[in-house]
Amino acid sequence: MSNNLLKGKRGIIFGALNEQSIAWKVAEQAKAQGATFTLTNAPIAMRMGEIQKLADACEAEVIPADATSVEDIENLISKSMEVLGGKIDFILHSIGMSPNVRKGKPYDGTNYDWYHKTMDVSAMSLHKVLQTAKKMDAINEWGSVVALTYIAAQRVFPDYNDMADAKSLLESITRSFGYHYGEEKKVRVNTISQSPTVTTAGSGVKGFDAFINYAEDMSPLGNASAVDCANYCITLFSDLTKYVTMQNLFHDGGFSSTGVTKKVIDKFS
Ligand SMILES: NC(=O)c1ccc[n+]([C@@H]2O[C@H](COP(=O)([O-])OP(=O)(O)OC[C@H]3O[C@@H](n4cnc5c(N)ncnc54)[C@H](O)[C@@H]3O)[C@@H](O)[C@H]2O)c1
Image 1 (tube, protein in one colour):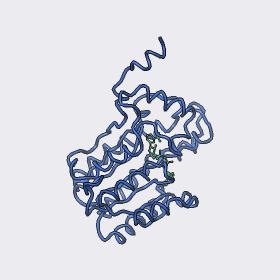
Image 2 (cartoon, rainbow, N blue to C red):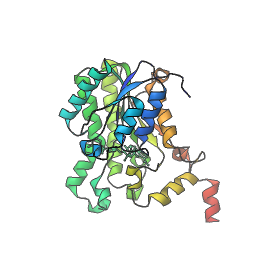
Image 3 (tube, protein in one colour):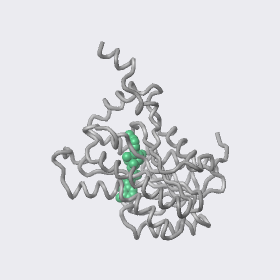
Image 4 (cartoon, rainbow, N blue to C red):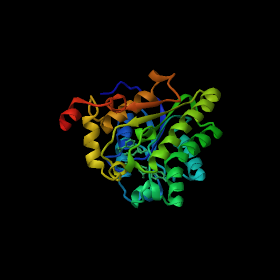
């Protein structure tokens, strides 16, 4: 269903790797709601080749960029404005990667070079995108930047590892940069804290299968799907949420406010 909520808006969408990616669903919904946008991912992710399928369906150009490289981000933003014919209205930051998680290093045995990489890819990249866009004055007034996060920033989920620290930093950058960008340019910055979702990044976390079932039982509405997350992103890109900024917004079926559910109690009875 389209209400043309994003008609006339131009965007940049980071992080569509394959059909499971949350960013993939956001691109499909943004297209359905009338937006034009560019798609981007790390050059290494291009090798899988799937993003071109999405680009064809969305009539979007793909511009590779490593989100840890300011030079790549500058190129991405200037090319996007050129291709789309003007300044940007929305950006989706849907990026996460931890070498410690990937290589099975526990939190209390972390490899600090990898820890650095986790922070750079998963959190500092948002700062780099915002700082570069602000310097280039690339985002229109009332523009909206959304990054995806997880509740491990507030509570301990042991196997989420150093990604928990990265998400805390990501949410802090959202508040701090949201202040500066809001005051000077009326640009909004928010994070959406999403339910566990079956994707390449999600499934990389140890014990994910059991965990996603636990979250399902601990959420009064059940886990939120990737498509529903995409729909929430669209509302934040739209003009219907103009005064929402510097927030961490839970999109989790009620998980974050729940102490225990009947389903979980029954399992222990
Ligand atoms: N899947 C979940 O359970 C879940 C829950 C809450 C939040 N999130 C967050 O949602 C976001 C998207 O993840 P997803 O679940 O769709 O998984 P995904 O694996 O499909 O997406 C992660 C993306 O990050 C990209 N990426 C990695 N390094 C990069 C770099 N250097 N430069 C540019 N891009 C890079 C990958 O190529 C990939 O496209 C992440 O921030 C993730 O932490 C996921």
